[in-house]
Image 1 (spheres, helix red, strand yellow):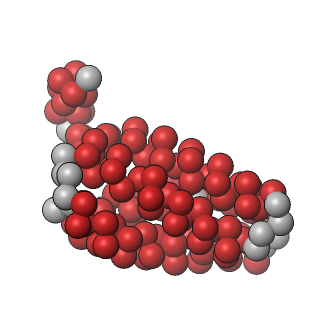
Image 2: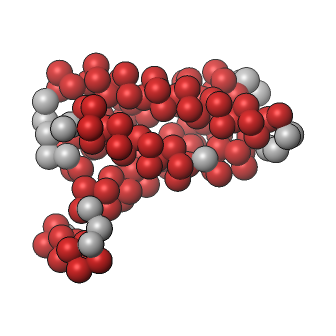
Amino acid sequence: MDRWLIRLCSFLKIDVQFIKFLIVGGFNTLFGYLTFAFFIFINVHYTLAALLSTIAGIIFNFNTTGRLVFNNRNNRLIFRFFGVYLIVYGINVLFLKLFDSVQISMFIAGAAIILPVAVIAFFLNKYLVFN
């Protein structure tokens, strides 16, 4: 899988790590969004739902992101990874608060912010955790 992805990314002048991050992140995001949606469904406030889904995501995502995207198996980086996701959580809540202020469904808001938050998370992970 890596060879054809590397060739395609080279041809398109796209960062291979970013593409891997998007693919792995797709699975991680699905897990995180379903966790968030579950908490919203059972009437947990969106700030707590975002926090709980972020914590679950950190646990779920650390190994997949480190190993599959950045080829790094250093488990001591979990603390930096956690720090990055504290920042991501804050950004997430700010976006959700913005959507809430205009009375947009939290289901829609959670889905709408996935890509911008993923881009931010990629760069924070690349430069602050797995550099």
